[in-house]
Length: 513
Image (cartoon, rainbow, N blue to C red):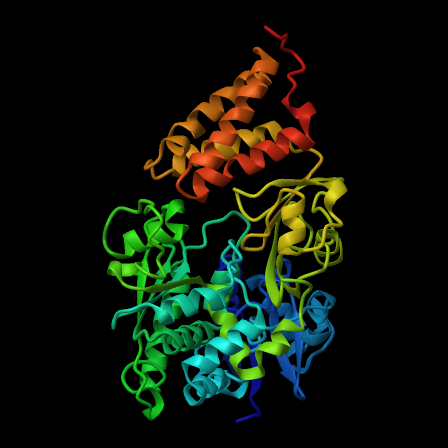
């Protein structure tokens, strides 16, 4: 038997949808091939991206279709030979070489369902240090890091954990929000498919820090492959003593349950998610009390999203000061930005805060896919403001974005060229809210419906000035009166569209009536 050649084919939703499984089947049938299904490196426009390990260097080819496999074999790609789809050494691909990989440093690099591969690249070293150091030291390290919640609100993680740690009661919980429903976002999914053990480790450290022995992951139902991989990762962690009773012989025990959502966008809000986890309808809760004091089943609960929790193991392993060395001001660390929409090179880019939106879109994204001029960018999901081309030099920084009336949110970036109609986009924001509202508060439930009607009247030039004023008043009511961000932030894209793109709200045919 000849020498085995290691070949990597991603097992990740985007790659699989483009034929990665079929490519893997054909490559696995070749002699002397050791096939590894890794996660995606995040260069989505190159998927499926196949890698061949030659003399310790991984050579990338992509995007590969099942029909390309025969020509790859004929040109001796298993030895790294030239081919029209050869991209060169993976670590030299420009899109990847300039990133600041912290949370995603193993994603794409390893078999996500191998304990040996995980530990070989630093896995569980953060948990080991946490077990030795204890809760107080964990919280101190987290405070030093400056980590803020990556789910959108940007709330300091250490303060949230400290509140739960100091709350009274023997039973506490860790709830991971993996209900990634914002348009243009996929970092949670890619992390859970490419390095699920890092999320498990992060939840374990959180449990140790606050005195919780039970965790729940609330996963959106539209991620079936993520569910399959994460269930396998949970089983693997239990089998090797990294989950369950007396973890690695310590007196610390922790268990994790996976719960599937049912397609409700509003369950991405923490209190609606907790209601759903309890088996109730996903309705917003009144606050106070805060979930940190009365959360899941009325017990103190840490609620963080996937990226927040998966960033913690590295902070414990390498130190909070090192994490804080990334990024300016209060925007510390890195964020997995996600480029989507009308963009030439869509995918995931993990960078330290501080680079500009223009750098992300042009240097990494390559501009619009259509080649037409960029007109607007929506950052932070369907509730994020529309940013005009004139503001693209704004640094990716929580406070700098707030200054221009925008938000970074979960890091989703959706790009539009000059063919977009922003009145249509504003209408969509209101319509989206009307469809997805849980209905508990009047400003969100009724205001969004009225918003669609008012925008329609504006575009039709019916009492234009009066309806523009009415729309502004309606937005203020939704911002000030809604119970949660669903209604409270829907006005952001609407008001930004009116402010920056007023001509789109003029009908070329209508007359003011």
